[in-house]
Image (cartoon, rainbow, N blue to C red; front, side):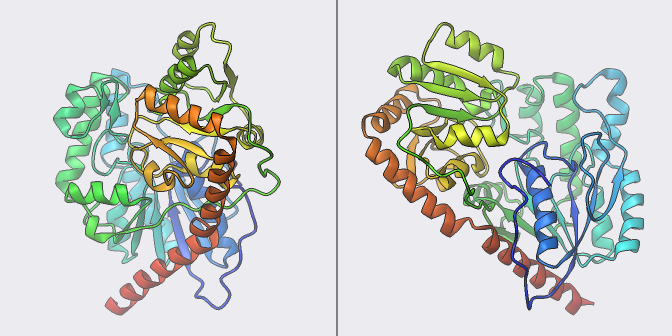
Length: 424
């Protein structure tokens, strides 16, 4: 159904457990990013477990056609923020009456037992949440980023991490698209939603992908007590097992300042060790200029997922030098599933996914010297690299299996549905 980390794979049925009708809501229905890929995978996996799934989304030319009952609202183009487009975009960001009308009709038709929402803001808006509550449907929300606590959903901008993420901070720092207009609009809409308490009043239970994100939400006095921690799942890929110690370091991802690829290139310059970089993005030209004539840096461009796995499998280690607060760190799980060690920034959810000295090495973000030393350490000791990789694979198998993830999610669904039935 979708490419990337979550492939279409056979999922065991939930024999003997209650079958439910589950509504999944996400603003995109194609694998635009990790949250979207997870939503698509979850819909398919729940069907394989014997549940009935229905989907509510936003129309987009890249949407895949679901094999389930499906409803969508009209799309809006938010890639560019022009003055003449502002009224329609602002209206959608603030409140979508179209979404409310269509969702009410869809609920009357489908009568789901529970709703599981993912990313709503901007293209759909949280206007759908009160509709679910008035229908008496419990709402589970998976937190994929920081968009419920700040207008800047990544808490990162051109100046670095915005630990405040407040209305004024986002505007002052031009935290959205590095645009004053986009920042004023986004911050104001977010503040209005905050004053309405639209998330807190209408979400029954939050699902955080890491302890780090739960602590951050709790520190901001927002939904921490209503949340459970459930890391995203990851099954070991068949047919891509590690062979040997690897003869290069590998990065795969979007070429954006948040990913810290500039730190990796500086570490490669300091050590002279070979690195391969897969991906594309807005920072591509700057990174090529930074590397210049360095012969030990190889830009591979955008690769298919299969090709990415092949390069990953044959690397000495995968480097994840992120400089933003990664909520979970899925990018560090995939290599571990292949038996490849990870060198990652000691930041956000990454420090929960990578165990220093056991499944990989952690270094301080934006620290070229520490990253260079970690790379040199695994280059000089291929046996340690293989040991770390083997331990990482075992940890993925025991702690991130899809079957256990789905069972815990079903238990949460059942608990909430039973609670609603009792209240009724």
